[in-house]
Length: 137
Image (tube, rainbow, N blue to C red; front, top):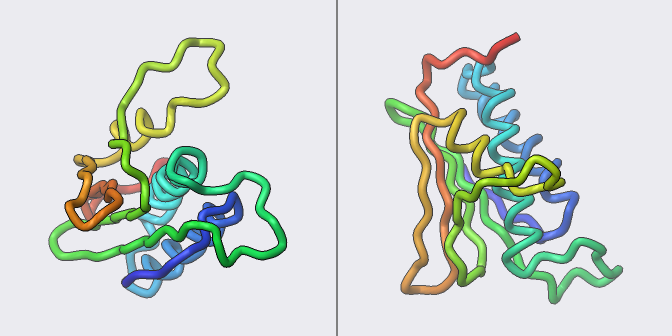
């Protein structure tokens, strides 16, 4: 299942809600917390680094879009596409940095993740979660 969001801060919450809805419909409620967190990190990165707008104007028609795709087979695959031209880079945040840990979370909580620049434009960043993984709590 896929959906499109305007690349503004509220997209992270909308993406979490979409992801939770899909996973509950697929009877995978045990993946919701982890998937929501990781989706939120990827969408936030898009807003911050791929042409999104942190303080959106009233008219959103010129704001870039982001596409979220959630699919399953023997694992859960989540993909986020944006129009950015820079690859997603895992970096080490300093202790006093207020951000820069999003991909660390994706790396730690997913089975695998990656990103590709696309010949057709933009990039996709994705992660995989095993279907039998249980959220802590």
